[in-house]
Length: 132
Image (cartoon, rainbow, N blue to C red):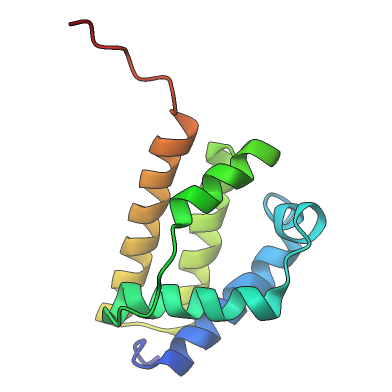
């Protein structure tokens, strides 16, 4: 039986393992490695803070992921396939490493955040205009 996500060290293992998959993924890896040449050692602590806050409500993250992804979308138009692959790899990584309520919550929150981002990024400007 696997353990649940309980500590920041668990989050660090999850995020590092997840991005190891992302880096080599055909669908989304190029965005991180070829387009943005992401500095992983700067990116990881931000992601650790983000997920620690998402799962443990630490208040340690102070950023705007939607704004960052809107910027990414201007350079590399994001698609549903990108979001689906991100979700698949994240859930796969959680399932490989952990099980329990926090592991389930991590997958649920990842899917929820991804869904909101898709709605805001992919449908930006497509909502019908209200006439007054």
